[in-house]
Length: 71
View 1 (cartoon, rainbow, N blue to C red):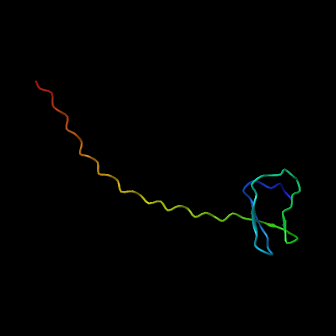
View 2 (cartoon, one colour):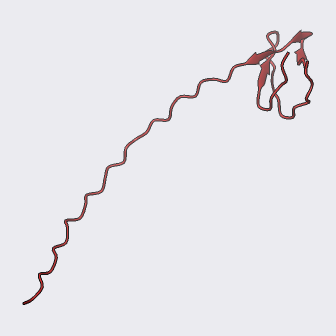
View 3 (cartoon, rainbow, N blue to C red):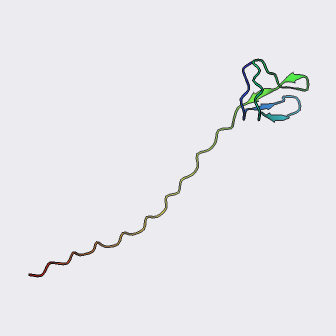
C-alpha cells in the first residue's frame, strides 16, 4: 500500500466509520483497519462550480467637454 497523505479519507465498508488522516506516520506499508478489515480510500466528492452572477454595470458618466481656449 502507498503512503497515506494528510487529508485523505478512509471508510469502513462494515460499519461506515470514516477516518481522515491528519498526521502522516511515514510508513511504506500502512494499513488502517476497522471491523478486522482494511478500510477503503474514499474519493473526494466533485465540487460543483460556483454560480457566477454578473453584477449590473454602472452607467458611465457623460464625457466632460473641454473648454475652448480664448483668443
